[in-house]
Image (cartoon, rainbow, N blue to C red):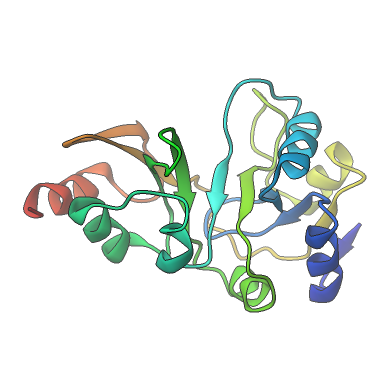
Length: 187
């Protein structure tokens, strides 16, 4: 179902239902950050062992889940909110990809909820990205879809902090050289 009803989206997220949301890059599937949400998203994506990104409101929420050193802080301050996923050490000694999205609809959602969301691209695992509301509705008929076409169509750049190194996992909207320059400048 395609909708513009923000309250319906909020209610669905609070009920651990997957919703398709616009981001600052491509359409994404989002669900509440908890075990039930994770299992639901895994099932709908037909995905087994690949983790999902964590969509957070801001740096304050991010720090509840990740370790943020000076270099990561500078990258976050420079490029987020925006088309970047940064994989950081989590507080439970794993790693997690973090997104802070620059999209009016996402900002509106976070004005009404105070919990992070799992986020992944709107496609089946291993399949091409879905770029239209009609394609998404056909592949995910039981998912609430936000009516928006304000996307740039290119996935986020994904980088990973690995101790003192910054690794490129996927080139996307933000050139890696721009991110790496900020990383190298920071003590």
